Each structure stands twice: as C-alpha cells, then as structure tokens.
Amino acid sequence: MPRVTALRASGRRSVAVELDGRRWRTLPLEVVVRAGLAAGSELERQQVRVLARERRRLAALDVAVEAVRRRDRSEQDVRARLERRGVPAAERERALGTLRIAGALDDGRYACGRAEGLARRGYGDAAIRHDLERSGVGAAEIEAALEALPLESERAVEQARRLGGGLRAARGLARRGFGEDVVEALVAGAEETEVG
Image 1 (cartoon, rainbow, N blue to C red):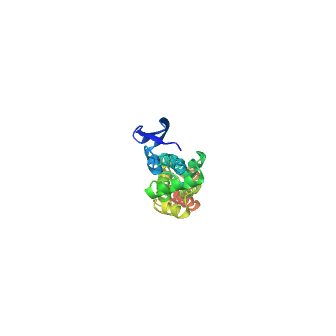
Image 2 (image 1 turned 30 degrees about the horizontal axis):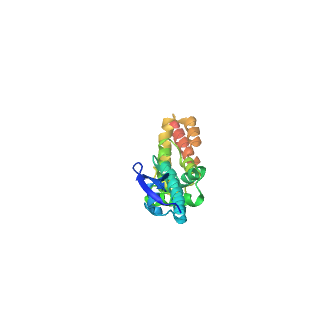
Image 3 (image 1 turned 90 degrees about the vertical axis):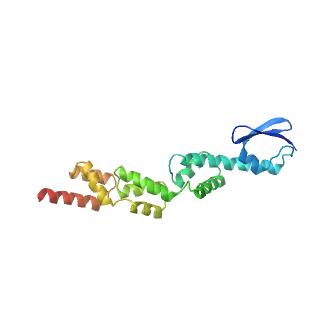
C-alpha cells in the first residue's frame, strides 16, 4: 500500500497529496477530509473509493451551483445541464437534493420570477403557462405563479395601449398568448367606445 507522506495546502481550498515522497494529486480540501487522509497513514482501497466518489459528488455540485449562481433555473434545466456534462444519474440527484435543501433550487420561486418577467414583457397567461411547462415546472407551481400576477385582462389593456389599439393590438395580444375571451372583450370594448 502506498503511504501518504505529506499533505500540503495548495491554494485556499485545495491540498497537494504526496504518496511515498512523490506528488500524487491536488484534491479539494473537502474531499481529503471526507476520505480521512492523514500524513503517515497508508492509502487504503476504501479511501481511494471514497476519494473517487467524493470528487464526483463535488464536481456535480460545482456544475449545479454554477448553473444557479446568477439566476434562478428550473430543476429540469439544472438536471439537463448536469446530464450534458456527463454527471452520473445518482450524482445528479444528490447535487439537486443539496441545492434544494440549501434553498438554491426552488421551482415555485423560479416559476414566480419567470412569470413576472414574461408578464412585464407583455405576454399573456397561455404563453407564460407554456413557457413554464416547457421548463418542467409542475402544475401547482404554474398556477401559483399565474395567480400572483396582475389579472390578465389588466395586463391586456396595457399591452393593447402599447400596440396602438384596434385589430393590430388584438392580433398582437393573441400572438403573445392572451386568452381569446380577453382579446374579444378588448375588441368589443374598443368598438363600443368608437360607436358611443
């Protein structure tokens, strides 16, 4: 069995490991601690397995954290990113679980933020629902996000104003996912105003 002859700090969170007097690897500090490496001890097979497992776990977690570092993402999106990076299924689920526990991954929060952003950009409930479904958000989270928005009819009036009113606005509202009943009510209201 090789013997750990030295553990030296290498950066803030890394440790250079020497085996039998030769530099072997630089590992994250957390991995070294979890494997129980100590200078003067033999590197046992069990420790090598723990090192490999912990390196995979930490690499998966790093990818997942990087995905949500700048903005909220859906769980499905983060899972797909991990899969594209070749992270094994078990490690993907562990990384996602860790992010959920830490509060960094929350489909409900993602849905509310995404719905609010799309509503500000002039989209109706159907378009917002479709976008969130495509992101893998569950039905309950989607409904909660839509309920938190101002009424679709109020948003439609504002968007119709921006589009100049009339049939052009009605077509624009329909393209942006506003409900048929909302568009019809706006067109009927506009016609009554013109006649009256």
